[in-house]
Length: 361
Image 1: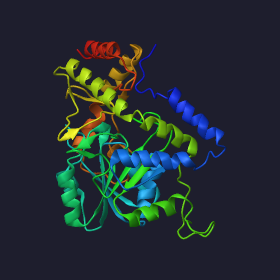
Image 2: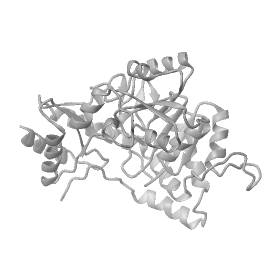
Image 3: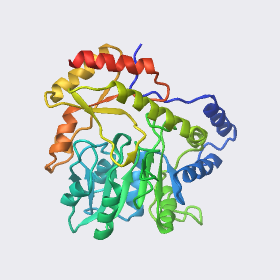
Image 4: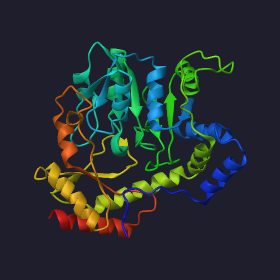
């Protein structure tokens, strides 16, 4: 039996609400969409939010509501899930990468500043693995330069920076509810915005581009909506979200007590009340990408699923220009992610840590 890296939990209550949505015979955008949005808004303490068909759809929607055009420039972290950069490439936007801090795995005001130019229209920060960027300095930088700021909080639902929820600090925040996320609807996402003018555009672009008169398109919109079925699961899971967040924090605290040694270090959380999405560690300088991958293979043979860190954009052919990203490049070779999920038991954590120590010694 293998301990999976992630294991979504859809319980009886979730299935009950899903069946209600099916029985309503309205399985597209129905009442549970509005109910889910209402619960999310209350949790995040925001006024303007819409759920979407995926986290990537939320990012695409963000670019549309901001009116970004081919050739417009945006800054994206050099280490982290690359959804924002990938979507930007498909839209003809110019992606510029900023390096990250080697300990937090996140961008900061200094690394972003080096990547800015007069053409920058948007700064994107990614709260990688549930950690959060040092937002006060980044917000100040964005305001001084009059640049929009977006938070990719796909992995950080419930994490807080100085009391503020991830995804609610910048001009726009995006979330993901795919199968491995803290709250899961299978697929799905959400986007929240500060201004009503942006929210009005969000509603337009999310649903074909018409709002008052059916089929009369005001903008060239898409169908980026969440189905009523997925929203029913999300609505149900919101009822136990605080319990899910508490369990993840407890799991992380158990890991932190056990995992000590000079062969690796844990991701550092600064000024953040984090809800870890995964247990990410950085192996020491003696490890290469090859030996890190071998470690992952050995753990799998012991019944433990783990994952490598993200690839640095310089290693991917889809990004033509190469950037000075020494920290991002280093992390891509030496990060390994261990399981965290709602039902992970203490005895399983002990087993994971024991086998990890045996293999790397």
